[in-house]
Length: 567
Image 1 (cartoon, rainbow, N blue to C red):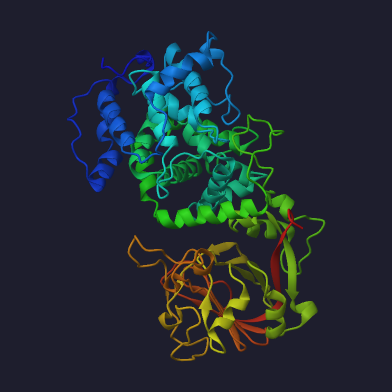
Image 2: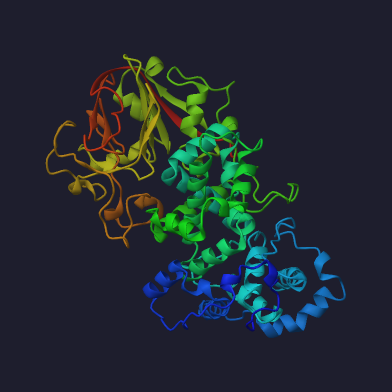
């Protein structure tokens, strides 16, 4: 045994990780360290992992005054006293029902509670940190004593590098991470998302469990492998692994009956028993095979979700809610509440179809209810009236029903008033959150693409050739070719003060036509009279076109998003 065994119940541990002959870690370059972490280089030796953890955590930039081991020794007796450590009450910012043991012995289990109480004493600004018990329980495996573990956890909590997000410590940060995860699932796990929508009354509640999967249900050997990479690469790793878990759940359980009345409980059970289906190596392999947004883009998306919550006054957890819930869902109305059967009426889609569409929109707008802004049945087939009723609303939803009973539409992230930046010329705008979809004859959502029209990339610029919508100057590609360190056109430049060259091009409007660029080579062209339309479809993709190449519009509707929490 090594010096890091005080809190470990070795009878419960995998003997293969106790003391394998692995060389010391000498590399300091980030890329090499990242590869070793992903490969599990130090996972084969308990003592080596402990030394690597100490090295990585000691390099975390922290606040000037960060509690250390000596502080713990000074305060632990005053805080804990002579009380039985195994029955110590925990602060409200953690969930008392989610304190994993991770093969700890009795002393280690008691130490988790003692350290949590001391951290609460030293970090009064922590208001919500459900992952903390898991992190402490894990780090006790690789600490000589309680004080050393306390110091390591404090360094993680006190990280002051704005570009290095580690553990959520407020309800606002945690809840916005749940919303961000929902956005990522919607984009990267569409098959699993479709299943969640079908079997869950509140899909947002399911996704709010994502950190619980990692820091509550996942077995210790898996958590340790995730933590290996997390300490090197940061928060993005957590999103990757949670997405991979959802993908595997869908693969294993798709087509099978539910094991309980709740898909939320089924996923938790799947994660607890994940060893029956997926090895730690396979889980990480899947996680890193996902071509996720850049760290910067995820940070911006998180900021957008935090801003949406702040604008609605949601920054703290309501104490009246049951603390056994890992995340509250009171702040976001589920799809069924957002689209009221009694209050919703469309000539194009049913309540169920609108709920399907609502499950695709970004999480921060799931707070809103659909609001009819324009319909050709009431306002006539006039493009100018289309603009006048749609402008001032962001985002909007366009629904189209053709005379052939085809139904398609688009989610548009940006206010149509942005079209004026190009003067009288056709100019493109929008963000990568835009997408087009088809509901009839069958449901299909198309991922975003870039409309290659470089001379229009700068805000307010004019095209060199004022071509008709059917011109060959518009071409499509399935994904951006920018270097990985640059922003892809996912978020709006004007929302985040980004350079205009990063602005996206998905929507275009003039007095003569509307162009909506969708995904997988799909695009909609609507003429000024709103009676005729055309689609563009790239034949290199297997997806079927949105609708007929040329079609007659029977009904067109534009829907806005009404903020029900702020009136």
